[in-house]
Image 1 (cartoon, rainbow, N blue to C red):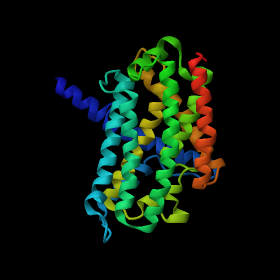
Image 2: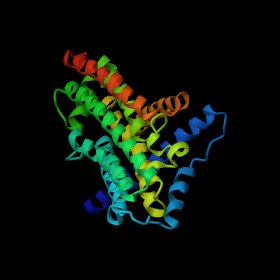
Image 3: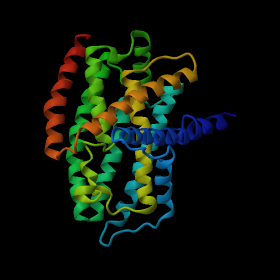
Image 4: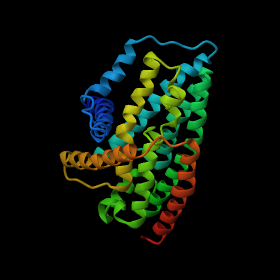
Length: 311
């Protein structure tokens, strides 16, 4: 019975299948909101799943001169670490029972997908992929650094604990972190981190179709590209969920209430992401770095100081 329960939790709810479905709905929601901003109808709800599924019935082409092993392993490691991260977050939010759910481990897991996207692009030896990888490398050094400051604010407000269960429990007794001044600053940092991590405009310069023809993804096709796209689907669910756990967790009496609060908070994040996407053009990499390093990072330092003062 325990084996069956674990299999259900990790594979069905709130495991891989549930997370993939919710991530696909989240990606569709962002596309649908964008369409409405542009006075278009937008895609049907199942379009994201079709876009990913069709890649797995296409042929995989490996470019001549590419580092074959690294080229193949990069998307596999990317989707594996993403699934691991997503399952941990889901188990922690809904059942409060993940043993290794501390923010340091989760930060490592979040860095891995970006790192192997970069390595996969470099392994292809394509000049446009190299350009995209260089952009992603610079951008990653900016947004990951800002997110570390966001995590630092959360840790300070949680009395120094790095465990997600303790962070959630602290909010259950003392109120959501986002209700404070430092929590609002952390939320601002987190929203732009999500935007950059998912490669949503204005931070899509690593795959800019109009400039470098898909950049880091240009040489990938078939199932290998499908694994990359699947990992992004998972992150569309788990990244907002992670931010909700850190900053806006509400303790609920039932699983249904937990899901309803999650849906409401997720909709708010999706709407903010869609607004940012549709009021901004694609940023140049120089402007993006300046924004993260010279605006968001100093803002984060202010948030740290406020958190130390209990504000």
